[in-house]
Length: 95
Image 1 (cartoon, rainbow, N blue to C red):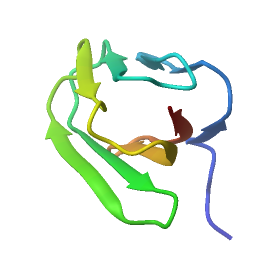
Image 2: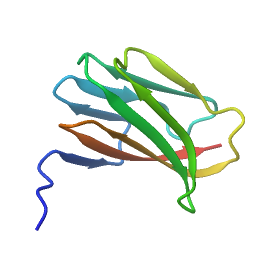
Image 3: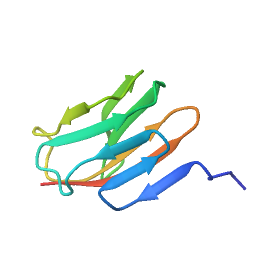
Image 4: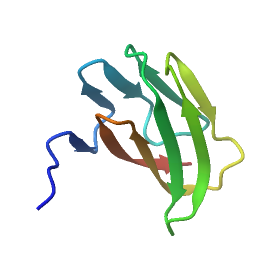
């Protein structure tokens, strides 16, 4: 059995775990804002509803990172953020 004590699955607007949070309006019309007070390496991925990777970015500090989603088709996307201590998965609806 895997340890999922650091895994967060949410459906609300805010997801907060220690020094990590990301905020957005759901559904999203254009911008996704990701913010962290923790200076750690993060991998940010966005998958479409069929599981195809449509965005991938590695960052050493996520302070007010903005992802412009204007060119993305309307539909359901899945945001996946992780580092060595933490995994967060979030469902995003793009208008």
